[in-house]
Image 1 (spheres, rainbow, N blue to C red):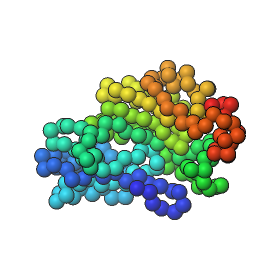
Image 2 (cartoon, rainbow, N blue to C red):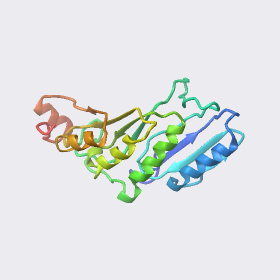
Image 3 (cartoon, rainbow, N blue to C red):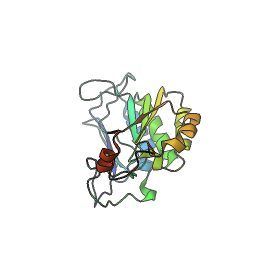
Image 4 (cartoon, one colour):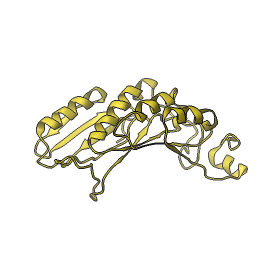
Length: 212
């Protein structure tokens, strides 16, 4: 959930409607693990079996996970397993696509409000306990995050991880692809709307198709 002045955002996480079989001690343990990243009050509501907190920055996008008492994966509102975690490592982008960033100027998050790589690693481990096995790194444009290959290496060595992917607009990929692959990235998605240079420039307001 996003709130606050301008584009200053804090992400809210909710573990709600938990089965009665999940012990209160487990909820308390999760609250303790997540509390270093929280802005605001972490509340455990026994009647609703819920854990709610607000997490600083835009480093992790995820809400409404449900923990199963017998250790089964988290599920969505339709009972489908939630096995993939998308992590936004930055809110910044080097393109200005009309459908994504229609305004001319934006107020970016302060660097200090972004989750550190160590915080992202810890949160990924927490969600792995809820059944996550796949991680996708996104942005903004994730390749704008300095030393991203270090984060890839930290996540790639996780024994629970089965897939590590990245979504990029491709502008910076030529210089970063080798280091990301060597760090352990499994696969990537290049988001490209058109191969026509004039149309690309109109859509993105940048003349960057040759780099892609």
